[in-house]
Image (tube, rainbow, N blue to C red; front, top):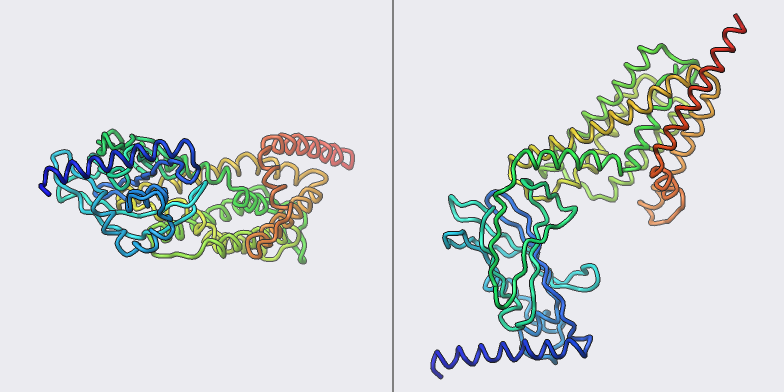
Length: 428
């Protein structure tokens, strides 16, 4: 058979398969067409790509048969799939120089509504070239199934403020246009830094356990510990100094582990970290009820900060950021965390200090400690043993009305302080 005839035969076979898939997709759920998803994480000199391919479409492209069982096809050809990915997926610079293609893990995973063959690919730009502008080519399924599509999205891109929480669709690859020009040169370091800062703000604002830990630590901050109990309010200067020491120590602790874990020096599984965070809240709640470590609050806050920093790092770890982008991400994210913590302290602490000098503050302290301890117990059971309780969800639901709680706190603190003042005047 001549080369020209072979090409015509291959092309005709591909179009026949495409037409067959189109017709079958309207009548049989087994051949329902789903799109390939290409998720890109962009760096300065390399692109990390996650390919999510529908098994039935890939099996059809590999065998050309509707009767093939996708699971069996993928199992039989598992050893050859990395080479297949390298052959049909790649990138090149705007002037035509190819990227180096490295195929990592390839296997079937559950993705949203069904199983997909997931392949992790690294595209390395040639020397002197940037990975922020390139032409992407994907014919993994399209070289045989002509009505298939690949939806290409950017998942992470520091310069445009994408950190994996959302995806930006940048184009569609089809049999008619198997290549897509991607240009991300419009971003900037400042945009990435701002996005990291906002991410830190949101992480604390939405992190009920982190906020609860901070609030429980603040409950006894204005009191003196004597004889194993919390007694009368301390001097204002001493109270503020103690709060500053606790917040600073917590900041130093979580900053250390945030940086170490993000760059890969320190890694722990997420489950024990989440359990330890719940334990830190429980210990702090007990301390708010009765002093466990009076005078040593900054040391304890620093130790617990180390644990919380490991949880913060899960947001940035594994992003594959370049050194400059990683440093700015850590800095911006950490500053966002500190800004939100400072806002919480500034909004809550004045009312706690005011109420502690009035009547009924013990009720607030014991009640707040009880709520924090109950929520912590619920989280420990859920995170360590998988036992669901309503305690944690109740606190998380209440946190969505934090402004209402702050207004109530302010109003009651003002009322109690005035009563306390009138009582002192009468006694005099």
